[in-house]
Length: 204
Image (cartoon, rainbow, N blue to C red; front, side, top):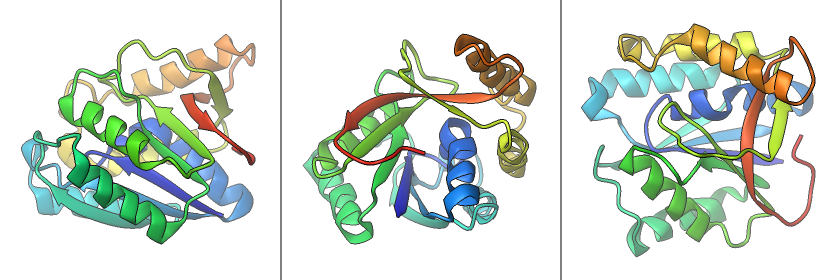
């Protein structure tokens, strides 16, 4: 089975779904692709950011594809929908992960809506949260207790971002622990998602 994780910038996938991707890789050896729309040039040196993303992806043997869109200026339009749609047709994923569409960052919103438009033939579409997500009411919770440390390791690889105010690894762990309490699994770590589309198949 092929898994496709889509993010507007390097590190969004790590924030949103890396623990679940690692669980899929460890449990089933799934083939995983990261489709990253921009090089993240507003947030730092784009070459360094691409290197960080590739190094992080190697932790779960994921292949990284960069689209080279302009950071800060991603547009939800026919052109981007077609580009993403062509990648989906090429890779033939069973599950797609993408950002949730309510977000304070315009790139995240445009990415989410473009992926939704391009995913008409996909069985499962899960939307993840990032530090800038707002008002997501998750309806799927996936335990990542065995992969939370790998998720934190992946995030630490993004050294160029660690001075950002939202890059608080203790807060990230606390959020995943909170989701464990929410599903009545105390002292367990969970990632939360909004299941936007489900036609057939197993999520995990």
